Length: 162
Image 1 (cartoon, rainbow, N blue to C red):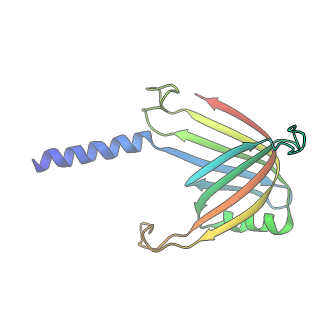
Image 2 (image 1 turned 135 degrees about the vertical axis):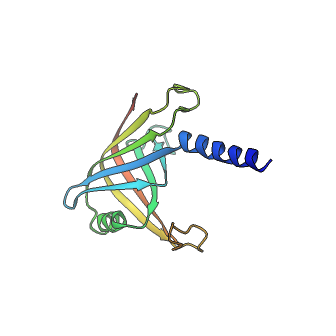
Image 3 (image 1 turned 120 degrees about the vertical axis):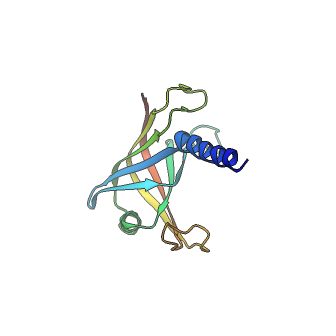
């Protein structure tokens, strides 16, 4: 019975690992140059505000990107961008499906797909650093903080690659 449970646990972990995605953000700022960061998660929102008086578009469409990542040099890069209101020329967010399961409804069974969001002409509007209670410790048992950066971009493109 123990052998069966152990096999089930290993197979479950393998299936989870196969279906996992990885997220990488590559940004180029006007003055600081380039930074690459492995993301733990992200959120993307497209907004087109309407005028209360006319119901029409009040201003151009905004592309908001919120990213979460572990502590590291990327936080200092993004923090400096906020402090100096530095223009971010481009950021490319790449999601890679690491396993063979594929995304539900998108090429199920193929696996290895990549989605790429390219954002241009923006700024980092805010950064946040959050401490940990120790439950999210790294492999060495050291508690890990969580970093967040919020970007506002003027242009956006999306592509799916096999």
